[in-house]
Image (cartoon, rainbow, N blue to C red; front, top):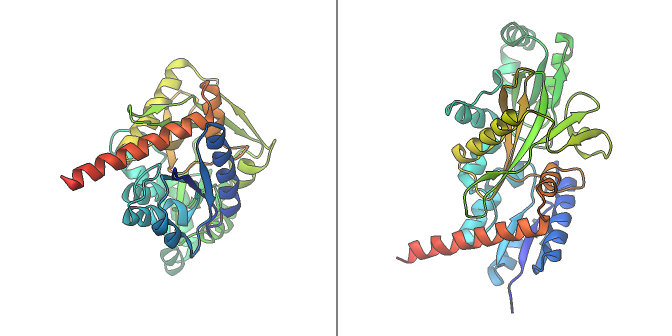
Length: 323
């Protein structure tokens, strides 16, 4: 009997509902491509089930802390179960936005100037004094977000210094460390990167225009609240630079099979890195499926090719270990 591919979705993060929606769509796409698929949530029976009947491969569609911080992938490695996407160490690096920004900047990629503040520092040194120093350094407007997290939860655009305290509280509600970033005006874009074993390549660039001016949680998951254009209406050389930056970020962060980089293109055409997602969404309003379609590809076929790549990598790793 053929072992199924398991799409893992749900979990207990703030993004559980989004994860379930992504998982359903990924599973449907794989089935349409002729792949035998089982869907599983993350619960106390998962390890016993995978130990008794290891899946052929796992497609992690877990978003947020428990899905993208590398922990689940660490467990899959312990069980010897292959999975699509980055390994535990790369996930931890990419999921921590300040760390990812530092590594990406180290290879010459621009990223907005920022300050990283743990809640304890913010409280102990006096919130007002700290915020005044931040504004003096970075100016306004600012973008405030949790240092670790996804789906733009706790993310706020601050144009008035008086709104900064509430933005900090919102960010700290989703994690103990806040990233305060200088706002860069321009066109926000997303660039998926695929690697089916032949090397990473960028898919068409998606331009994002949110009604509220910032691509926050509501804009991401409320149909009609954001306008997407793919390929992005940008000059060819700028599109090429977006693709180069996304692939470079994928490589320097040690990612595999699939990632999505979020970038900002300023009015002068310069490209800045914002963050990267190791488990991008697959909902009806998500960006990777839009880009896949614009590339003339079938979502199920793409996922099936990534499953094959992950399985082949696992076989190679097993061969090296045996040798």
